[in-house]
Image (cartoon, rainbow, N blue to C red; front, side):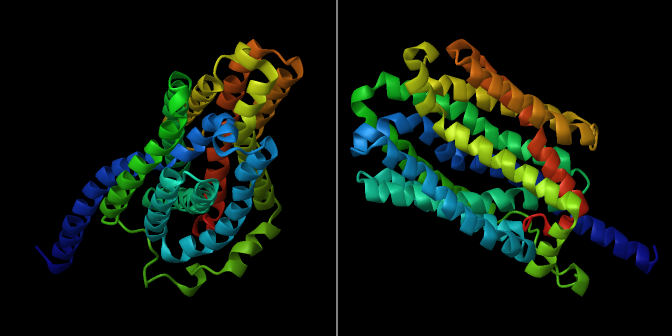
Length: 355
């Protein structure tokens, strides 16, 4: 055997263990994602009871739900360039520990100030994770961006299936123990996330190597320059519209449904559970589809059809239509976001997190 062949075999032998390690750590990451998405899925279900528990008005509750969004803007601005420059794994570890801290605050937050601090901290680090997670998996699987984005978002949706159902049942089943229902899960999940972060710190790295050329190195100016391309700007605007509309309506849906329909809609947590299930099913199906299949159609029609369905349900103002219409609308428009991410990643892979 000549020396070049021996060298190639040595490189292959060294690469194989890393390839084998990738799968278990992705399973671990999926479990961590399911845990850290708890707050986003549970807080809307818990929100009707927070007014009485903390003695606040609906307007003050609105501030508690809305102000974290402003914190998220700061988080996004800082995280994107940092993730592109240093890699998603390091930033993910920081985000997981930050979310664990926020859960500890919410678990101990028997006063409004401490609980609000936990919610704000959670929003900041959840946004960090939301940026770094797709960037990390995209670099691990550079040839299957839409499929891995769909799988990642499907994993995030699993918490939206389980959490509203369980929390909704706990709230209605133990009305005299709301404090325990509110705080205990946060405290338990904080410990689990710390353990998860320690284990995930051994996962394969996606940080740029020293061999990257100067042209490939990330700068904020170069990333922002991408927005001068009309198609990239349209992708960014559509992704912003999708994420903002989805987040705002899901947070306010339980309050809206309780005030608008009362007991006719059963528990709003059931609707959010079906909504999360719709997300998991549609994105799971998209992950099974061939990479790039129907890309143009998926960029246009899911948002139009899903948005029209939800508007029709709001206009009809019927509890039964809303119970089924909202999840059906989510089933359609949930196909749009992973497609937008994959299109942005395909056109500017080194600047995905910044975008």
